[in-house]
Amino acid sequence: MTYQTHAVPDSFLNKWQDTSDVMARIFDVPAGLIMRVHPEKIEVLVSSHGEENPYEACETAPLNSGLYCETVMRTQRILQVPNALNDEDWKTNPDIALNMISYLGVPLIWPDDSVFGTICVLDNKERTFHTQYINLLWEIKKGIESDFKLIRQQEQLIASNTELRIAIEQQRADAQKLTQSNQELNAALATVTQMQAQLLHSEKMAALGSLVAGISHELNTPIGNGLMAASTLQSDVSTFMAHRDQGLALTRSEMQQLGESLTLGTEILMRNLSRAAELVRSFKQIAIDQSSMVRRSFALNTTVSDTLIMLRPLLRQHGRSVEASIPEDIIMDSDPGAIEQVLIILINNALVHAFPNKMQGKISIFAQLTENDEVHLHVSDDGIGIPAPNLSRLFDPFFTTRLGQGGSGLGLHIADNLVSTALHGQILVTSTEGQGACFTLVLPCVAAN
Image 1 (tube, rainbow, N blue to C red):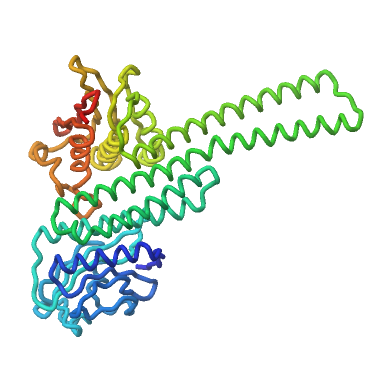
Image 2: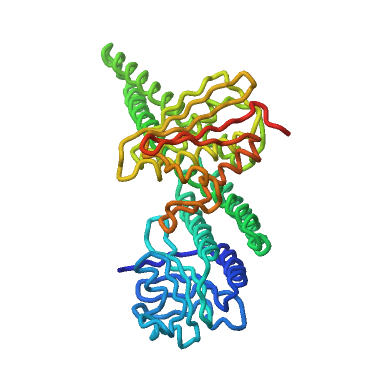
């Protein structure tokens, strides 16, 4: 297996140092490490601070030397070694020379699915880590991989066009807020509840970053068409001016052809500039809503439509479309940012879970206004459905059927939390295995203060 080196800004290294220190204290181990792989060596990128930790940041070791982390990277699976001294496969492991005989580690995967390295804890005594510690390590991995997305998105934003400079500045501001919020991680990781709050913020920022990349992609087509039409118009006008400067008169057919060309060019310009303006307006509103998460009056069909515009690249990637039917007269006084975030979670959930093995199917969104001024917003699919035993646990934190395959077990829990706290409603689910699933948001038209 060949590896590549991924660069990490200093701001993220500082944040990960705090995370590693807290992780080592919670796991009660001498060493908490974040490892980065290079083409021919592996590096201790971040090492927890502690007197008993034998590892130092920036030290390296050659690949194929038998380290625990090499197996984790090669298999891209969790590895737990309770006592290497009693294990025939590990009793010659080089870490034993440092008295690190027990190990728990998981792979870190870059957004392009290449291996970045590992995150792991090591102890100088025999340890068998309980399930809650394993789950916690997976969630810390998820947080760091969300940071990978932010790093990747920052690179894309720097290379994007002038129209997205405001979004780049917002991204930098969000990164600063994220760094500041992670300074509170020392206290937050003391309980699972506080850790969930931090992960909610990370999920929201990652979703907003995806929307930034999506709108950049969507703007390329109308702006490109507009530039092509403007170039043609410029050429026609230059020809006309050249004739005039030379004292040459255009024939009637030439005048007619010029008029038709100008008319067509201006129509193309207006159509594509209007499309670009619509995309920028949709993105601007969603970015404001998701960054501020404050209540205002809004039309539900506009909020749903803007969200689907932002998700269009992701849906196209999965070969899916979403059918939406929202009455235009549903006006709400609530938190549109929370509704957008919940829709993104539910649609992502359907894309990941409802249609395995490129199964055919569709996703639908529809809404109705009840007599007691409640909105019932339904997100349904006709996929494989949800097994009955899982329905009662679906919104529990850390419940997932894809542990170790990219599933954090927090998406639907975050959606439930947003619906109950920000929107003052409730989320319900119905499903028959093999016949799809339907999530229903029961929301007041006017949210409580």
